[in-house]
Structure formats: structure tokens, C-alpha cells
Image (cartoon, rainbow, N blue to C red; front, side, top):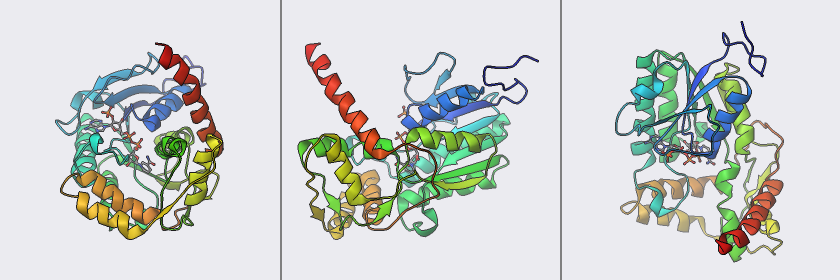
Length: 305
Ligand SMILES: NC(=O)c1ccc[n+]([C@@H]2O[C@H](COP(=O)([O-])OP(=O)(O)OC[C@H]3O[C@@H](n4cnc5c(N)ncnc54)[C@H](OP(=O)(O)O)[C@@H]3O)[C@@H](O)[C@H]2O)c1
């Protein structure tokens, strides 16, 4: 039997559907699986162009119909499908229970019907203590459905991704990053690429449930300061009262339930420690600095075109 470059034989190589392939995490998981010699199919509503040609792409909206075709023939499904965690009103209105739950149940039903063997889902760290938050509860309801299904399962519960914290960089460049509360709560955010390695281990059957974060535990204030340091700017981090964030959540609910869910989630995580078992090597300071430098380099090129 022939061997792939990874040393994996076609017999132990898995055929994995990566649902949410356009996200930084989905893309990183796909690349990690390819590196390990697995076959990858990617699912999203859009058509990403920045993936190796060996990734077979399927365009499907899990909320419109069960993605039957996308699941056909795969042995494993990985899902990081979900509504955006950015508090931008333009990025969708549906709340997490009305988006993440039906989209992932639809994918799970399609995976079961297609005869897949294993389903990996990305929930949220600290879920055990935060089920009262709609954002967390929606993820955990998916996790429970995955664990009840006929498929073998893996649930990964990460802390915040570096890709989500990048939203602080433009704010720091403009000069102010508001903090909710006193900024003293700590967490250990994880690089999407490091999380992808953990997810690939889960897909390969290495564990069935794991809470995971990055190698550095930082206060919320320190995370904001790192965003300023990436631009060599002095930090300005005024404290917003937490009740203001909660109030904006209540006021926003009729306008945008997704952002309202996020406001309640932020009000909690910004004021409570969330530290998970550490994985990976990547540092947030280096990540922020590399992003800031890439933005600075890209600007003159863009302004010439
Ligand atoms: N970011 C964090 O810090 C963090 C921390 C803990 C847990 N999580 C959870 O981890 C998961 C991934 O987070 P992320 O920040 O990487 O999310 P993201 O960048 O918003 O990516 C979500 C992915 O889901 C896809 N998608 C959305 N709706 C879909 C639909 N109806 N049908 C098919 N695909 C759909 C999107 O693709 P298209 O838009 O191209 O279709 C995208 O690839 C989410 O469940 C999130 O809540 C995130």
C-alpha cells in the first residue's frame, strides 16, 4: 500500500469535512489535516480562494437545507460553523440559539444520514459555569446533541481566539480601547493555528472533550496594552461600567439579537477569569505585532493601486 508524505497510509487516512472552512480556525484545521495526510473537503456559504487545490470545496448554507451532498462519503465532520463573534451590526442579526443551534443540528443530521463515523464540534471554554448566557447555551446544546448522536464525538472548548482579539488592533491604532470593568480578569487566549492542532488531535480520536487555551495567561488590561504596543503607542484603556455593557445588550435586543447575546457574554468574560489547559507556543504580543506590521506594509501598496 502506498504512503503519503506524512507517512500515513490511505487505510488510516480520514476523509474530513471541515465545516466553516472560511474562518481562520477552519482554514488552519484544513491545513493541519492535510499536513497529517488526511483528505479534506471544505464547506461554507462562500467560495474561499486561498486554500490548496487538494481541498475539495462545497458551497452550502446549513440553515437553508441539510448539507447532504457535503457529507456524502466523508468519515469525519469538524464544525466551527457559527454566527460571527464580532459585535458588528452588519454581520448578521439572528441570535446564537437561532443560528448556531439549527445550523449545526442540520449538519449533524446530514452527517448521520450519510454514515459518517465521527463529529468534532467547537464550543466555548468555561461553559460549565456560564450556561445562563445565550451564546454559551446555544453551543452547549449543540455539544449535547453531538454527544447523543449515533456518531463518535469530540467537543473542544477553547478560550478566545487570537483572530477575534485582532479587532482591538484598529481601535488601538485610533488611540482608545475601552475596557469593560477594571480589566483585572485573566484568560489565556489561543492562536487559531495552535487550536487547529488540538482540533486535529480530537478529529483523530485523541480525546473526546477538552477545554483549551494558549500558553500565556494575561489580564484583559494587558491584552489591550499589547494591542497598543503593536503600534508603539501609549495605552489608553478607559473603564466602562459593566452595567453599561449589560444595558446595551438589553437595548440592542430588538435591533440585533446576536450582538445583544454577545454584549451579555462580554460583560461576563471581561469580569470573570477564564483559564483553560494550555496548548501551543504562539504569543499574542508577536501575533499583534506581525498583524500591525502586515497592515502597515499593505497600506502603501493599496494606496498605489
Ligand atoms: N472567536 C473566538 O474567540 C471563539 C472562542 C470560543 C469559541 N468560538 C466558537 O468557535 C466557532 C468558530 O469561531 P470563529 O470566530 O472562527 O467564527 P467565524 O470566523 O465567524 O466563522 C464561522 C464559520 O461558519 C461558517 N458559516 C456561518 N454560517 C453558516 C451557514 N449557515 N452554513 C454554512 N457555513 C456557515 C462561516 O462561513 P461563511 O460565512 O463563509 O459561510 C465561517 O466559516 C464559533 O462557534 C464560535 O462561537 C469562538
